[in-house]
Amino acid sequence: MSKVAVVYWSGTGNTDMMADEITAKLNDLGHEAEKIFSDNFSADDVANYDGFAFGCPAMGSEELEDGSFEPMFESVEDKLADKPVVLFGSYEWADGEWMQNWTSRCQDDNINLVADGLIAYDTPQDEDLEACRNLAESLAKAL
Image (cartoon, rainbow, N blue to C red):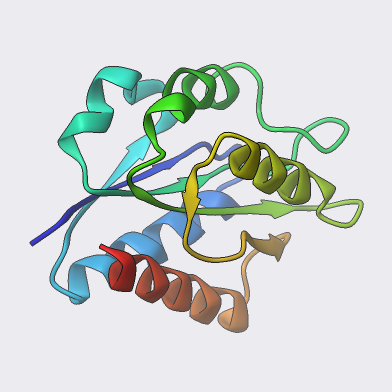
């Protein structure tokens, strides 16, 4: 059984809902998935997990949340090259540019992204939650 960290930040609860869905699906698939708020995860924790789902909504001018999530992600991104990773988050304006930028950043860092980043507009609807489950399946296949 693989251990997976679902590390997220959420201000309105939308990305939290996505993290719940991803964590539940990974557990249903027989993996040991743990949902962890970004304040409670650090570079020292990376070695304890076989794969990762990172979730952060779009903030400000299409960027990652900078008080908790960005510093945490910056501290772990150079340790993720050999582990499967997926990205997810919600947004309420613009067109998802923050996910495009985040994906490019991960590719530049040789992070093993095993699926396209998943975005949900505002509160995740049924189809968004299904997409979360599909994302979890993609991660599970790569473990």
